[in-house]
Image (spheres, rainbow, N blue to C red):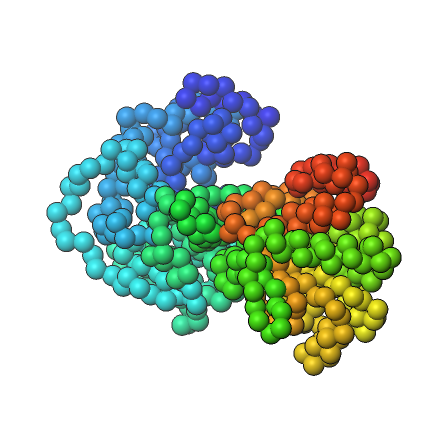
Length: 519
């Protein structure tokens, strides 16, 4: 360990640490634009300058390695003047776009200008005019007037994706970022450029002009689009108090977890998650009867399903109930499926019906398209697709979680099999067309609207909490399962206390060693 002094306080850090990282460990945040912990130091923005005793000039903290006994000053008149000078040069050509810029409220240039009190400039010349709407990717627009040439975007494509679509062109005041050989950014991780850009030069057409960051709330969650389980932030509008169900997810951003996804997420998780939260939503239960669709309240829908299940129990035909689950469900929900229908209800007809594998890559994206395949496997579910004839044979009530069963069979054979089942109920957050074959549909919550945990492919159990609230007649699958257990009168002393994800997770850890070791 090396001992140095930062602003008079002694700090001990490992040998080879930079002054910037040492200050960070001491709780001192140094201003910066070009520095990013995932890249080698660049030193182009000159904003992280500090004063080091014995050095004739100010030094870059991001690239200066500490020495034993080094004395560093991060706040002094000379340092403040140098930083104000850097900001003045940047603002000399920067447009006054703050009222319309998507980055306003999250912009480092705004923050540092406020921190250093830069209100006037010595420059009286007209600002340079540059292209303000350059398409550099399918969902990416570059505003060259806002760009400060920090080169974070260029380094990400060179060092992380290794696809090299962007480069730095020209020199001096003519320097600009552009695409190489006219080939746009298309690598499956392009959305990370928007997060990396510190000043709003690169914007996302999916989010552009949709809302303002200060209108959004932020929640920590886990991406449900593959078995990696990337850690994410869900940025959502909480909705209007007088308009139930008006909460809306506007964007997904990576949440750094070096053990899982680092500071990145793929575009499938970023854009697919937002579409999954907002598009084709089922906002209340309904029942199809005599060709007519009748919308129901939550209590009425659960009463109808509970009556049909109780009728089978009373007739001694509980084994005529089949359940098709999916590893889109949380660990807690899959645990309740097993406990209720297999252990207590007495049905051995429980299958897992997941979507077919997609494409993966050698970075983050995995071919499995659900977040909890490992959790389902540890809970004893067979990942093989169900045999449709065997599932339908002798079944009087079928409960489907999610619409994925439609992927495994041709529409004609699926319809023929389902027609022979007296009662078919689909539990889903989205309407995909499968509901037309069902007798009843229960509207369920999306991952952003419920608590739970997913187990990623490495066996890492990752809990998450609800961000937005669903519509009044939408419930999580856990709530639906708990209500069914109550309606059937199954061990009220047991299921009566398993009404939250945290309570189920504690019980899960007690009963299954795999989860107990990770509790």
